[in-house]
Length: 260
Image (cartoon, rainbow, N blue to C red; front, side):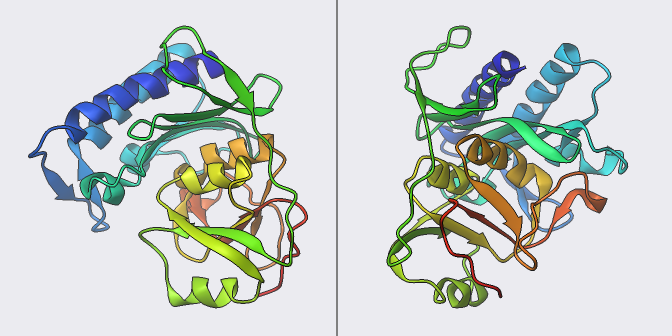
């Protein structure tokens, strides 16, 4: 499974970068007013076709085909072919390809590829998470560096927050912690920064869908991290109605979470 995920993510990344490097690519608005580009659609088609061929009979949920999804699945493949389209359009580089496998409501395998930053994170067959060092060959993995969450110091946490969706509610929640420093990142890279120990805490007090989070969630869990609901700190589960997420917190165990 991870061999297929990795190859498809890299191939989709090539498609995305072809558009990204075009000085005049077109941007349209979807029905929810969010942006979509040729890169989103090309990557979606490539990944969907590849997954359907490799895993016939397994349900596939993708952002760009959301209207056609079954609503009663707990085990499925889930894809965001271009997470961080706003970052892509603004040419900020913080966008990712995300492919994950959810089993009984939990994301147990996933790949996150940031083609503009040349960072590639994924889970191994045993569920452990690694970051692969580039350059990346489509068929043969390079050096895989095991990644692990930090041992946080609650006297001064490193916090990562959304680059495009930061709001007052997020700032109010972060203010409840002793913070040593903060950084911002787009897309599912925020999960990966917690997974590598570059950050301790990532709160998200805004709307997301399961395809936004599943792959990064799998990588973070594989690195020893946790993702819980904001309201009651119960584990975030997948296969929810409409594939919509509640507010959530991604963190390294050891962070002393506070109630809202």
